[in-house]
Length: 96
Image (cartoon, rainbow, N blue to C red):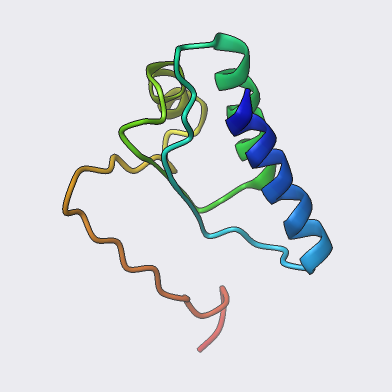
C-alpha cells in the first residue's frame, strides 16, 4: 500500500504546486507482493492524473503491469534497462 500512498502524496503535491499537467509518471511503483487492491487503486489514481505517459519500472509489480495496458492502452510504455526517453513540449493545438 506504500506506493498508493506515495502516488496520492504526489497528486496532492501537484494540486498544491499549481501544476495542471502531468506529462509522465516514471519509475517502479513497488506494488509487490501482488495486491489487487493497491494495483487497482494506483491505476485509478493515475487515470485521474491523466498523464501523457506511464513508464513502470521492473519492480512495479505484475498486477499493475498486467492491468494498466487495458486501462490506459495508449499511455503505457515498457521500460527496460538502458532505455532513454526524451520528452519535448509540443506547440498548443492549432498553433502555427
